[in-house]
Image (cartoon, rainbow, N blue to C red):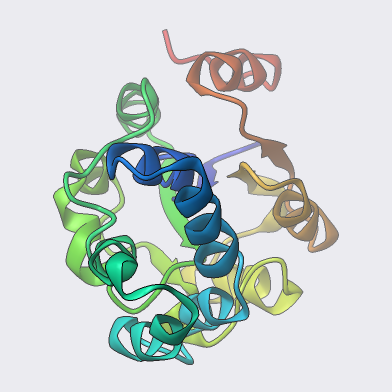
Length: 203
């Protein structure tokens, strides 16, 4: 029986969307593509999630790859992408309903060291308390099996009593590999249907 719901953060609860970031910055398609490919798909961004680099270090490494006119945009994308905090539509209501029905909610996220600064600004954070496992703090990222096993050990959870939700299929598969049932996130309404199919009704 599922008693605990383990959530990814970006693109599941929090709207982490590089395409939106670059669009709102008013960039040309060429500049937007440069930001998306050279920043968000870089080894350095992966190292940010692993806690090897912090925001200022990644900026120092990245600036030489971009024309100087894009440096202010680069700084915003790295240090202030969460301003203003935007949630995935409908997910506050899903989390609220799960919490109200007595499910334990846990956050398992690949995120940088600044997570502790911005996460409390998202209203949904109120349902998670200190039940957080953040990759940069642990120096392990999903889908490494050690990440999921650490979550189970730290929080005293049984795999069969958990459900993991992530928008990245390989991350969901990583949980399954560790014996944790998982769903690939495709929006709040689809999640409600997927949960109902597992006997978890929110209405």
